[in-house]
Amino acid sequence: MDYDNLFNISWALLICSSLLCFFGVIVSFKYYGGDCRTEPRAFNYLMRSVCWVWIASIVAVFVFGLLALGKNS
Image 1 (tube, rainbow, N blue to C red):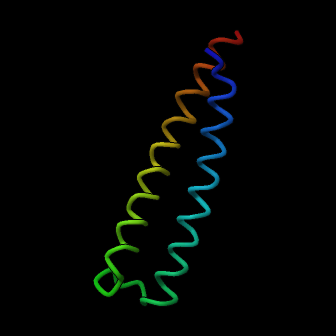
Image 2: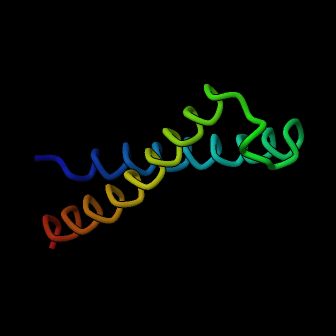
């Protein structure tokens, strides 16, 4: 299995989800004052999903990075 490509894909996913999390925090504080009770349910669900993708991509970067290093050594 080509762990180098999986590592690169998970790294790109981490960067994209980090940007989406940052954008969501800005929108949350700009339009809703940082109060999650006043946010629409769809926005709250979307941001929760983006944060779970962010957490999963951190784990994937770590795992595929170790596997790629193990394969190359």
